[in-house]
Length: 325
Image (cartoon, rainbow, N blue to C red; front, side):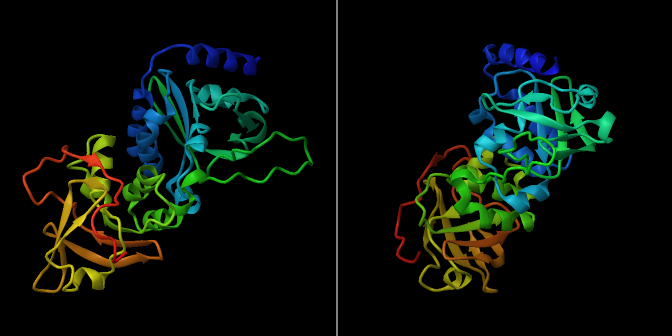
């Protein structure tokens, strides 16, 4: 009965042309105020791509530690954490084992694998719901979980082995190590934007990332377009070590970024600190590999002219001289 009701509601919502991502943006706002920053940012970035057309939603939100452990989820996996119907906690508690919850992936449902009445806790696809992390409003229900939901889960009979989990990363796997490192150091915003903004670049692209701490975004970023713009202005399409930044060859030059027309003016202070548009590089070479170098900043890189933040277009990064990358 419960199963039929869910799919009936799902068919109604799917055919209703609300055409708005405001529901997911609202969910992201609630999560950001509840300690689930990585999932909040991911929903903000992906809200339009998910094309959520229902005015209601239930979101199963992995904790920040899940992102550190597993990296940025693919869009497909993210859609499997969102249901187009709102399931209140009272409703969720009453669902028996085997009940199916529709998701934003056609013909893919989540399965209730433990019920409160019988098991003393609730789990979906064998992932336990944190009963202390239940949030929401009139249109959105949000449930905290400690790990990503296994996208290849298949309900089995007792005694049968569970299938192996599917990959979380999809086409963005090459960015996973640096994104995980950034999250582990508290650079959640830059980590989340890394996968979302640079997907599709050729595999051998070499990048230097000047990573501002999360709190520096607050003043300038009010929507996802602002976050994306700021991110692109902090990524240079070549490898630049600390020694490169203070070396005489580059000092006084302007470095191209992934934001077309936005250049970084490189100087060195009297104390030997690289200055990027007058912002000091305070943490040197905090991450380094064959493809990525990350330096830490305490503030954002602001335009060194009077150009506005909103005057921006995307660049593929392949501009200027890359001979040093």
